[in-house]
Image 1: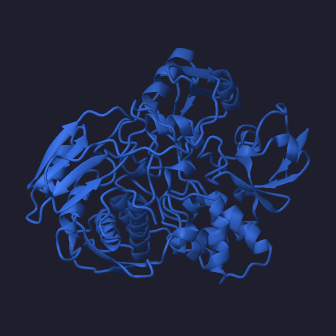
Image 2 (image 1 turned 180 degrees about the horizontal axis):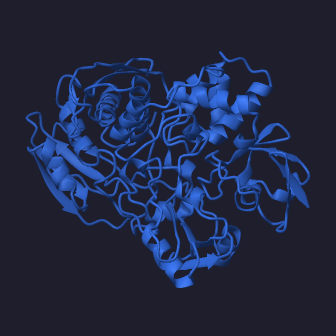
Image 3 (image 1 turned 45 degrees about the vertical axis):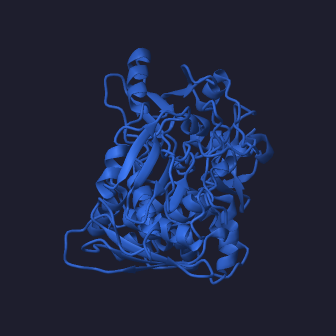
Length: 507
């Protein structure tokens, strides 16, 4: 049995493999990404099968035997470059993990004759995909920008991206094509593969990822239909505003990964994205080093999506009450550094840390603690006003009756307007999604029941309202602006819905 991948015939030795296994492991095509392992829910592994888009992670390779498989690497050079240029020019690619699949989806749409000005068709096509970085709007802009002249790589753009993402970032057409240096992409072809057992208590090592997953007894995670209340009770007292939040997953697409040679240094799991602070201190690099030394061979280590959900850090849930004078109490799941983050922006709030059974939490996640505090402070004012972030940026936001969001941001010297606007739109989308729809099902014993990436509640492209960003430049040192946008939009969205006391509020 064989398939034809980007013009080359690939013989199949494991008829039970998925098309994604064959593409990444047998054909060595690393532009095809795995973000859901395999749930068929993120779209990062989308390719063209005889010219039509298909999600490869849930496609048994036996169903496509003998057929033509085209990845983003196999598109005609001028077509791939045109799409990459469009994504770069519109700020539609930040980390670059999801874009190869989206480009394949858009190329399939273009081949059908869909008009470049048909934004609704582009947004509808994106229902098969997930992007956590850009907030969708820039990606829909890229659909209409096909054929844009390539923008030369710029150190200013990379610097702005690093300021916003807080880790080194590259910007350019290579990133849009999925060549962002992700750890699992860079591992040598002869590396062993390590995955966690189904119980999560040991690492199973095998010659291939498919074999390791079978040996580990991995069972595909599911989404719960049960409803769970926020885990923290409100503090006693009579307050002008109260707020309870629940468990929220950062929903980064590239799950934690590293690889290492015996005696070497492990690859960083950060690659071209910081996962919004969720990968600051992860175990996979140390595990890769240990297993490489044990087996005396290079070893790839990678979380499945379920592993990332169970072991990755979550935003600490809170239950808070605040008075008009800025005093009040915030009860928060015990998290190192969270009390300091809250006190830095809201000294009038007393912080009570409580022990709650549940997944790990982290104060390193985007705006954890201080955003909730400034949102509470904003709620007892007459308007959102300008919100200053610890990173130095400032922003304000409003939500119109039709749901559209208008943002103003100050982030010092702009450096690159396209990149800054992209990060601000992404932050606005993340805030809207967090306040209205995102949650994670966790029971009273701390067990997570939502183990698919779609169950996190991230807003889809078709559900995202227009977001406009006005950048107010100055001559100051460039500072992070998107975190302030995240806070300002969260405050504005909560206000626009009448301050319901529990998040997510619903649409």
